[in-house]
Amino acid sequence: MTQPKHIGAEGAETKDTLLVFPTAFPIKVMGRMKSQDANATNTDFAQTIAAIVLKHAPDFDVATLEMRPSKNGNFISVTATIKATSKLQLDDIYRELTAHPAVLMAL
Image 1: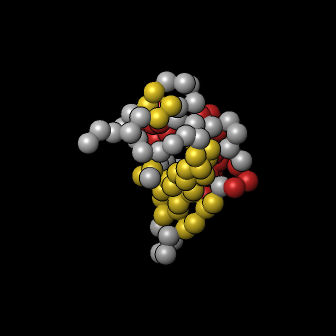
Image 2: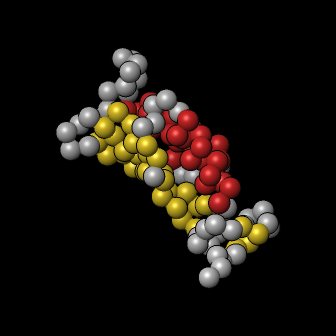
Image 3: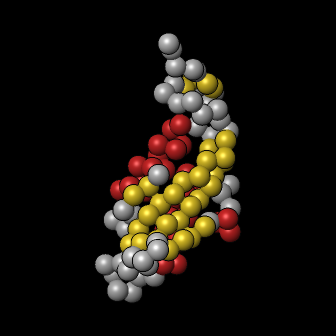
């Protein structure tokens, strides 16, 4: 069975994805509630995530960013739902997010 082929926003054929672009795509990012930096806040974490996402998805509406603390208050998750235009765009966002020291995980 062959993988479906789709045309991305750049007009290039994309493989290795079942997504059809453009599509609404939620990106969930987890970090610690208490940062290593005593001066950092949860708002700083959310702003950092928003800045990274905006770099790759300039039409992202920061007002739609969702923040949720974990049950025990040790971690925080931030969800950014973007209008994804290509697999390359998503890969670039995930690479930059997971390289950031404040990010524990990105889904």
